[in-house]
Amino acid sequence: MMDELDLGFDERERGDKGKHRRGRKRNGRSGGGRGKTIFALLLALVLLGGIGGGAFYGFDRIQNFLTTPDYDGAGTEEVTVQIPQGAFLADMAVVLYEADVVKSTKAFINAANDNSRSRNIQPGTYKLRKQMSGESALAAMLDPANRIVNGITIPEGRTAKNIFKLLSKHTDIPVKEFEAAAKDPEKLGVPDWWFKRTDGKKSKKSIEGFLFPDTYEIPPDATAETILKQMVDHFLTVTGQMEFADRVEKERGGISPYEALIVASLAQAEAGTKKDLGKVARVAYNRVYSGTFNCGCLEMDVTVNYYLEMTGQKTKTSAEMSRDELLDTNNPYSRKLRGMVPTPINNPGKEALEGAMAPPNGNWLFFVAIDKAGNSAFTKDYNEHLKNIDKAKEAGVL
Image 1 (cartoon, one colour):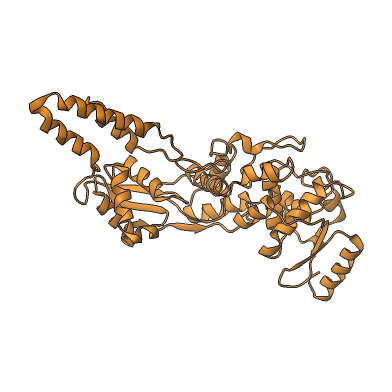
Image 2 (tube, one colour):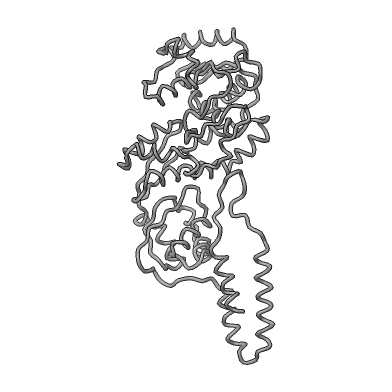
């Protein structure tokens, strides 16, 4: 009976690291396990009450069951652990437990709860030891000397191709290895449902849009695949916390989360200031989905530039683009093709995602930057738009 009780405790200690996929809460659990444990404990007490002289031994076992399993001291052999972006203390505890750094998740959580500095623990790679007490593990993670710093910052709005070059330069892993790993986004952790569209266009599975821009700690033994998985996992965590997919499906009138991700990338590329991200997203929605824009197309030069970059050509300013380049309908990212483009055109940040998820209300169809600070003027009227273009020229923007 007591062996069964001990097993029940060990199983619970393993925890369950939940993933944000569609806005669900982290570490959601059923309450059934606790009820079963209490029942087993009461049953054990009843049995122990009937065995006389063995009661003291049984009480000692139950007391151990109620205490927190913890190692003593500063540990044994060295081990490296990776704390992912967005990890909560409970997630860290699971990582440490699975690496046998701590004897139970509770040992670390208790130590963290008793130390206000625990909130300062950063994501990244740590040199720790196996079989440390929860208090020793916490102290080691708070010591900067135990954190392996190998960080790289991925700016918002970079294309996957550009990100591969940045990562290659930082890690010496060849670009071709990142390109090979990126060919199968689902293998990197992107769920199949993310690629579903509701606009009738065929889905094209691409890693573009899912490499979340942020600062990452690169483990010493990282591969192209593990690095891209880390970035995808962070994207899923951030969008899950935002409830991006659920809110888009509920609030954007039948537009799929993937199409909204594309819009976020367009806003990231086109908006001159952060405050205009949502407005640019609204323009994209209005042009493609509202039925109020004559061609039902995007008419954004940034999609043409994306195609040029993806095909190994030099990107250009709008003024440098030829008429043939702007109007080429053989280009799947043509500004004149009806509907939304096949994929995102870069990897947008959180504010661009927020702008596409919940854009401000407005019937704007046109916008243009009117000063060198990047502020844009928005309008639904083409003649008003022409006047705004004149203002931009006067300000030396165009």
